[in-house]
Length: 156
Image (cartoon, rainbow, N blue to C red; front, side, top):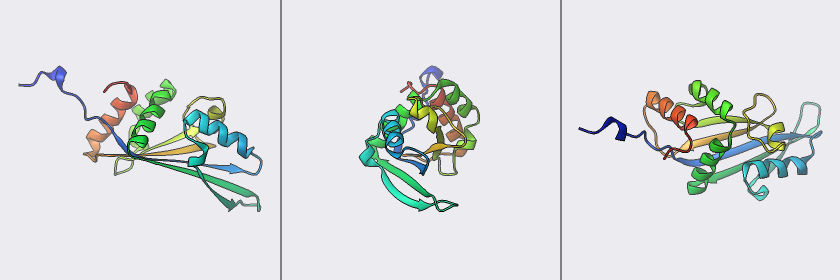
């Protein structure tokens, strides 16, 4: 019989990460890209830019970065580790709102906090993050595992 203390949750591992955000004509493109890149530890060269038209003919720039494999896994875990603890606790408490049926974790990071060098959850003006897990598992267990991961990001 296995000792209950020795039973561990499955280790969450990410196979890909997508980071995206929009910049409006009134935002300083260079300053924002550099600040987000620094706060999120992503090379500005990793972002691709698409120019879109806004509601009033203003230019809106969409930036997207894709990370895969080991890089995505390490980056995703570091992001969770650096995220504000109160935000991690809140997200863990309602984690089902941040997951899709395939186990992808969706986060929204406050752009202004990133400019200040902090990683905080956001609601409106955000950088979107999508983390795709390597494994798929039962939805109930998935919620438990993600909640545990968010509460204890340093556990193996």
